[in-house]
Image 1: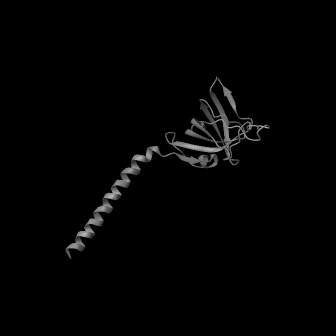
Image 2: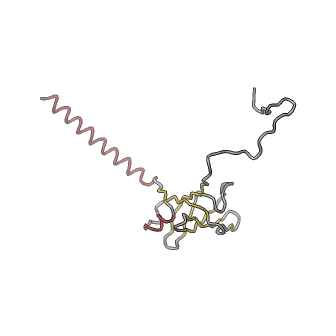
Image 3: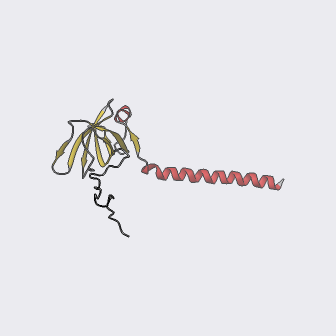
Length: 148
């Protein structure tokens, strides 16, 4: 009888400690979570300007404007809705109009502009080098430029 009460108490105590640990962990990570949304989802719900978000879609053709060096403004669309975005910084080489992009930052619902501080470009998974090495006609092999 003593073993049964002891094991039940142990299980209950372990579950309580685990629950407290999980609640503490989730509360601590709450500020680190970044939600991904499409422009239509972002406009459908009210968001706090303090909530960090990621939005993704295509850069609308004709919307990309470069100002004063590293300042950009463009529009992201998911073909249902569009959101104007401002960004200051260096963008990846693949960034351009009608290209897939994910931006991270804050949505200023008062003026309807998304202020981004990070830009990620979506690309396909196949790598294609700019120029493939040419075969050496004399030896009929591709040159090797590595060590050893």
